[in-house]
Length: 387
Image (tube, rainbow, N blue to C red; front, side, top):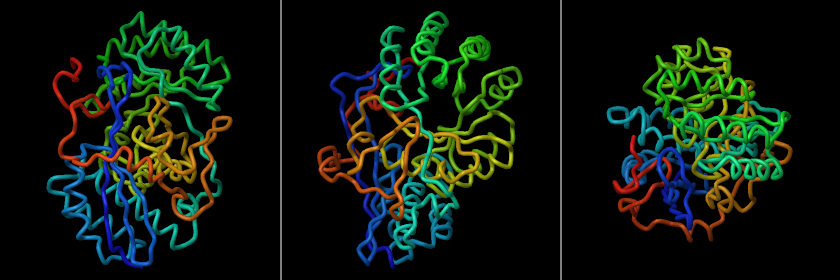
């Protein structure tokens, strides 16, 4: 089995009505898929969440030539090869994301070749993985309560909301959602990196009083010392890591004692291989892992294989904002029952793309992104919120 083709495909979706959040008004979504084909007809699928105009040249013009003719099952060596050739301009950001997208596709191919699902290749013994609903953006307390109840009715037992509306609005929002979901479901809170240390401490008290499950990203990723200081007094577990890359980045986060829960993402931080490495580092430090996923269902599934296999795997994130790359991209949709996502026993990732959806949302020119706010990626100054 040898690799004979590598393809990157960027998808773009535009909301009829976007959602309001700390970064402005989200008008659409972007994601980049990779397909790695072999000479015996197999196709491995991966996902990368970064600027498409950066991912495509890295994947197609630098990494693809390195992979053609190689055995995709030799994952560790190929990861190191891709990392080495991008190290001088990479180590984090788009280059690491590109390496990771291909790494995930290689794991898919290895599982197909060995007739085993990835969660089993990683040493797991169950295909079940806890999942939480990621939604609850900037709305009135009444709207948030209605949305939270709908998410619970949809099968979730954990929901995550975004804050940074201001002290009074944050308080009303948290209390409304906590009341709506009741004491038997978990409430997760994302600070959207919009707090200073004083306001973060004040919010921590509110979250403690409302039995919040975790307190995510009150600060930007660069402010590790701020996390360390907050964690000393915060009674709610601190979570961060979606904006970190590679094992070396998470090593610093863990070494500093900055968080209780680390949040790598296979579609950003270096693929299944690095996400698994992060899980091992976190376990040695006595920490739990809850993967971030915000781009597409391929990323959700890749992360879920890791969490299902990891002893310290806590949960995976599933976007519930009406994103077709989550809801429609796979031939078998994601289903959550009683808070659990069940993975397939099929070899590899156990998924297939809905090619009609891929064709419908394919962006012909990844170097020319229409202006808009794509949640984490913003093009056009008119869509950029005040920072």
